[in-house]
Image 1 (cartoon, rainbow, N blue to C red):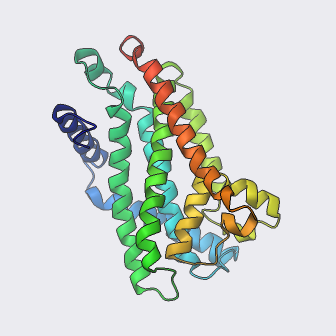
Image 2: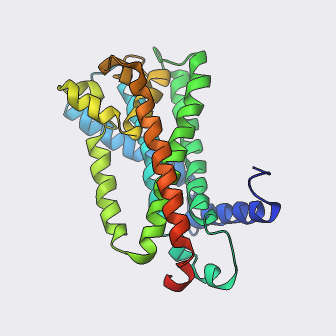
Length: 267
């Protein structure tokens, strides 16, 4: 990081992250506790509705799988939602000083990343007291790589959305609908094994979010979840979601860089 960012930019990035994280819970009685309590409340509601009432929770360690899926998806949703308005919200800063524009959405993602780490601590506390989980030495190797993949995918969309929002404010409402659709259409609440058609499973697993959530569950909560090797005979298909992540990152950075020169005029 020292080589990528000069000291002045590093200090600016850290200050933006600190400010964003502090403002998130300013004037809140419970403060930072909300960063942990919100996903737990959401988990409790969804668990009662889908596991106890609708009886979808037949998979082993379903409760832990649900909580892990919520935490990972919430990071993506929270980070992209915050980054979307980040450039416009920093309009006065952009007009007054010449700051590296790309640091603005990155700071929003980093703030959400801190939230996710706090939530993952809660997940691993439950895992530690659980039985029959999939945690092994492979978890130490695979899970950080999955988190890195998720962060890169999130940054890709954050660059794209924040640049689009500067000119097209309807993106906020569109993305809100898309996030809701994603939450219910990918296996966050339900296990992918409940999807009865294999070709649909194959298509869904090409979505990096689905691949990341399922792979994360396979090394933490339940090793029997449906993964790419289970529905594709060609092992190279495991590279497709990763290629999509890097493709999205390239497009996001390229589009953001192209539009950033006009930010001061449009915000």
